[in-house]
Amino acid sequence: MASRSANIKSKRMIVSSTTDLASIVRRRREELGWTIVQAGEGAGTSRFFVADLEKGKPTCQFDKILAVLGALHLKVELRVSAPNPSSAKSMPDSAVERRTLSRGPAMQLSLTHEDPAKIGCLECGQRVRNLQRHLSSAHSMRTTEYRRRWKLPENYDLRPVEVAKAAETRQLVKSALMRRAEVQ
Image 1: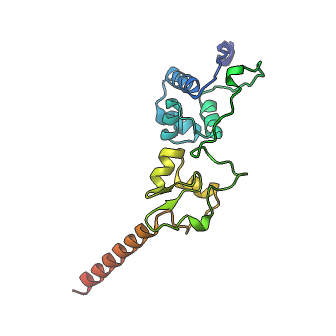
Image 2 (image 1 turned 180 degrees about the horizontal axis):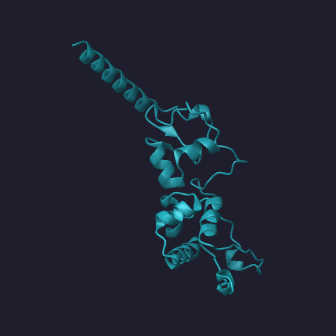
Image 3 (image 1 turned 45 degrees about the vertical axis):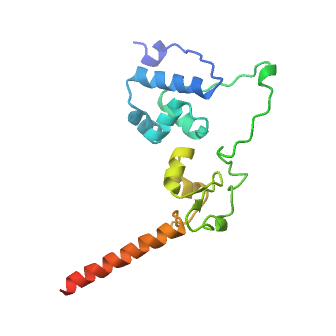
C-alpha cells in the first residue's frame, strides 16, 4: 500500500507579498481543519503570531514563519527570476522593522528608563507606557523572547520607573495592612 505522502501532489505557489503568503497559510490551515491555536501550538508560536501572519503583517519574524510553514507541511523554495524594472526601487527603511542582532538595539540599554513615565523599546527605539502591549502589537513578541533576544537579566524591569514605584508603594501599603490585621 502506498504511503499517504506519496499520494500528495506537490503544488507550487508563487509568493510575491505578505498577503500572498497570508492567504496560502490560511488556506492550508483550513484544509487541515486546524484552528489558529492548533497551528500556533504545532509551530511552537503563539496564536497571536499565526493570526498576524494570516493578516499579512509585514514585520513577522522569518524563523517563526518557517516554523508555521513546517507545521502546516509547507516547504519554501527560492528561485532566481529575471529582474522586474518596476520592483527595482529601493525599499524604504522603516523605523518599525525588526532590527537584526548584528545592528544591535535601537537604543542604549541605559537610556531605556530615561523618561520616568515611559520605557524605550530596544527593537524600534519607540518610548511607550506599556512595553508588553507594544511588543505584542508592534513586534509579535512576548517579553520572554524580548529578554532572550537582547540578553536582558531577569531582574531588569520592563516597566517605566513611575509604574514600578507605584507598584512598589501599593505592595508596601498592602503588606503594612496585612501586618496590622495580624496584630489585631
